Amino acid sequence: MARKARKNGKMERAKCQGIKPDGLRCGAWPLRGEVFCMLHHPDRDNLMLAGSLKTRKEKQERKKDRKDFWDFLEDNVNSPEDVKKLILTAIAEVRSGELDNKSASNISSLAGHLVKVIEAGDLEKKMKYLEDKLKEKDKKETLQDMLRKRHTG
Image (cartoon, rainbow, N blue to C red; front, side):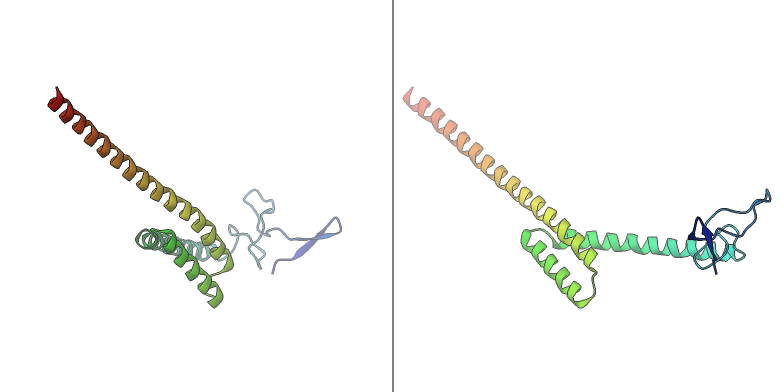
């Protein structure tokens, strides 16, 4: 167990008890509950291997979860009504304990931005529709003017 050292009247966590190649004591913080740092720990190789395998597996799982989440959003969230359903689902999951408050808060914040993006996209579509209709009307009027001129002239 890591010992506490007294320094200037305050209790501090002891440093690693390992000795460096130059003969000086290591000054690194020991692993939690140990007296040696990762470099000087007698079971260092097994600790490092276990840590790297765990980290690699966690990274792969997080990457898969992110991909699944983005696929879900792309397929299921296309309107403010869909965002409302997403938020209601998050609320239900918080209440049942399936989702922590921090994640729900993040979803809520991002959902607000998502609604704005969806609404902006809808406005853009409406503007394009109106512009196209206006162009059609202008073309029609131009064609009618040309026919009038031909018959009157």
